[in-house]
Amino acid sequence: MIEKPEEIRVNSPDLAVTIGNMILKNPVMTASGTFGYGEEYAPFVDLNRLGAVVVKGLSLEPRSGNPPPRIMETPSGMLNAVGLQNIGVRTFIDEKLPFLRKFDTAVIANIFGETVDEYRRMAEILSGAEGVRAIEVNISCPNVNKGGIAFGARPELAAEVTRGVRGETGLPLIVKLTPNVTDIAEIALAVEAAGADAVSLINTVTGMSVDIEKRRPHLANVTGGLSGPAIRPVALRMVWQVVCAVKIPVIGIGGIMTASDALEFIITGATAIQVGTANFVNPASVLKILDGMGEYLVRHRMVNIAELIGSLNTHA
Ligand SMILES: Cc1cc2nc3c(=O)[nH]c(=O)nc-3n(C[C@H](O)[C@H](O)[C@H](O)COP(=O)(O)O)c2cc1C
Image (cartoon, rainbow, N blue to C red; front, top):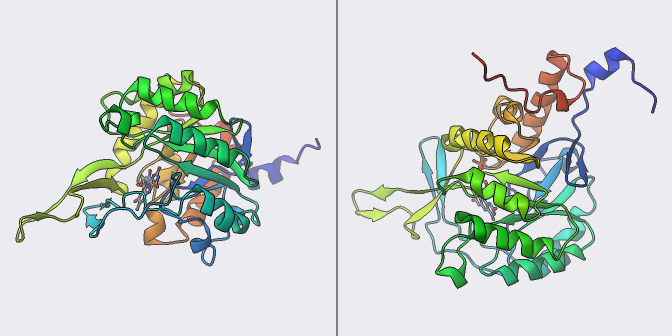
């Protein structure tokens, strides 16, 4: 390899990161459920510039989701109870993947199920689909065979679903953790031991809001998932705990609205980040975040983002 002269390297830092056997051109991804299937945002965002597009959560069969109202704005965030509405894994492959294949970005399929077998079958189907670069497993969903407790709430259930998916796919396997637990590091360690290549966190924080005049919950589902800036300090704290516990890469998610928010996660030790609710505020947020991260590296004369990942100094 020909070495770049020092000035050129400083002005065009290398943002590439590795997750499992997947090299991403940069660490900026879209968060599942906030960027549709990519196509919806393509008029506003050059998808070629993104490290990865994580698509809306897919189930084995299509789902219509929860009844309205499903979204409620809250201070510094939003509550949603969309209920994982989606077109199903087969329609995704037939109707959405051909569009995404045209772009020079990694397509990550986010999946969820109600049984381990459903997760396994989806992993098998997606592994044969041209253009899917990795699988992200959402374990925030209730396990119908275990009385409805979320897979992500217990280390043994989280490990079981991870092992099931691992057995069906050679694609990089990212397990997406729920913050609605007492000890997130314990769950992260369990999925690492079960074969995950990376973990992403956090999913939404369970919340609730009430209309006092009607004395009814604002969401038809009563509770919903809180996202946006309100959850960022919680997300960052959990990323820190998980980074300290596991050896696999950690992908930071939660309330990232600006480049400085993203950099907090990278400095804390996240290898990559995902942008969710910010996409609803400004569809071009992801690109502004990406540009701002590059500018920070230039300003600090860093030639490679690896210099920044986990560079947090916790000494007084
Ligand atoms: C409307 C909406 C839909 C979501 N759908 C999914 C989903 O299908 N699968 C999933 O793993 N996470 C889903 N999430 C969670 C986000 O991917 C992300 O983890 C969370 O919103 C926190 O990031 P943010 O604060 O940047 O939005 C959804 C979030 C929102 C707001």
